[in-house]
Image (cartoon, rainbow over all chains, first blue to last red; front, side, top):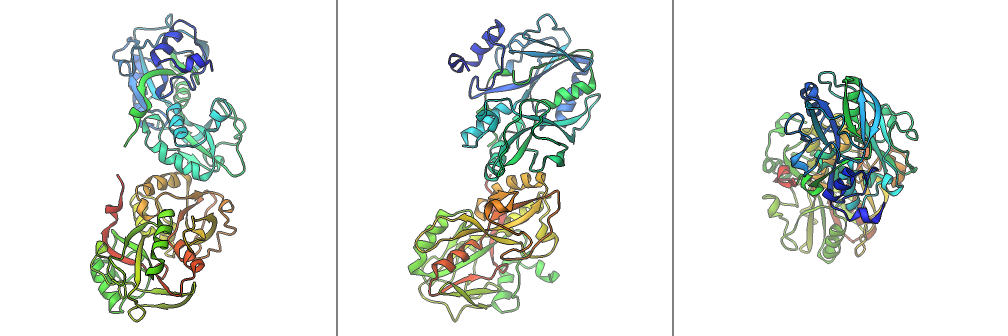
Length: 264
Length: 264
């Protein structure tokens, strides 16, 4: 990462994204501040998607939604414009990803409703602060993510199995990770599984469905967290005419501090 | 268990033990109340044993100690007499268990100091209340306990490896168990290990060093907690001329409530 970027505030970083000067992965940017998954849908689907998030809070922890249809701001999370302030977006038509863009001003509709969901970057920071190694950070890659056999509770047309992220840990660190992450239900909370991946429908850890593989040592367990890519799978299944999300790893950087999300 | 016993208060149960009418396992008695491991030593060793407990709080969570040498009471834990109020005791001479007794009045010395340590019965109750199955309770046997390769921090002559208890669980229950037990550091707290037993020096789960084997299913992980039998191993190594403990499973029943031990 450009060392100059590391010292920028969330507002300064969003400014760079707005001007097109910053278009990549946001991992490690604005340490201490919450980054979010983003889902944008036409209003007609908003109630169902909200219900889906409420019914599946571990993969879809809702942090903020549009103050009104068509309003591109999320005032609780900072002075931001959702049309320009992410480094990269994915455009879905009829459930299929058709395009990746750095700006969605041309696509914006008066009936759009946006949902900002918690992201694992927040709990990774808490794990690192607790002295727990996070393998994807160590290896400088995107976290490996897998489709599972764990069904989400369906709402309306939104349905599908949970996507999980995986971090290998020795057992003592896995136990500490449960403690640390339990304080952060707004960013996926405690792991949903650990140990045998086959028990949740994952055949091959070396071949993730999203992100990059990481090394797993003999004395380690794979530890699995509910993942914010889950709503993208639900979007594929709901197949709305148009939907927009962030591009994986290219998150919405907010003014909210991770510490504000901590329970207890 | 005699259904009449289940309704007795801790004081009534101690009265039955004092009169010799109750000499067996205390599992399931006085639900809601704290039961304790007991270690009694000559005063000359008390400072070292206290230091050992402080240095190894997971296996040796100290709840109370004698108000003065020779005093057989523990007023913080109830109106009780340590010479008579446990169902069974073990007598160690030079580190070797030489006798099991139901009363230690004849052995009591003016220089004895007693230590009451938290016991897994308290967190088992919390697990059951959270809907987590506890296999040794389901199968009606004593929990399996194993000597490990995890060293305790030595203090004076007290040294040795940690003893752990094991409860098999599916991963989701293991994660819930970490959350539930983390609230109870005074009764061993969160597990110390889960998954591969060989990593902590256990060769054969079907052959515990103390207690009884329980069934472990293919979809389960063994989950390991620091165990209050650890100080008995430290006693074997320190080999004092005389020491007395409770007999495994035959605990000191106190007037303190498990709920009083909960953090948060």
